Image 1 (cartoon, rainbow, N blue to C red):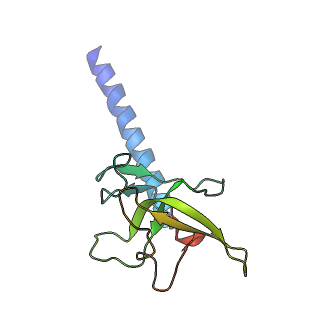
Image 2 (image 1 turned 120 degrees about the horizontal axis):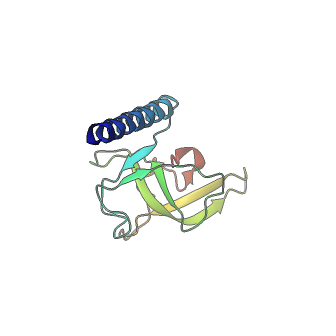
Length: 130
């Protein structure tokens, strides 16, 4: 009856929570963050402040128009050191062949170069976390 249904639902919820917490713990301990909480309105209306994003690194190369979460060295009063913004330009270095990126929040007037480490004009692949 109802008790059996409630017990089954409770068991399902418990198993699901254990799985999700285990997955999160393993990925976090390996240096990955599976989730990102959006802290600003710079990507509205598509991505709103407070949204929770599930991060994934695709095997496909990053292209202009893709949305990425990246590590920004300069905090400038923000509560986080990561940002979610759109790639507005892809650049290949002539000296190393390395692919680099320029990002910008959809609601921002300027690109993100002021967020990158001092003297860095392009976002490097290793700074992208999802």
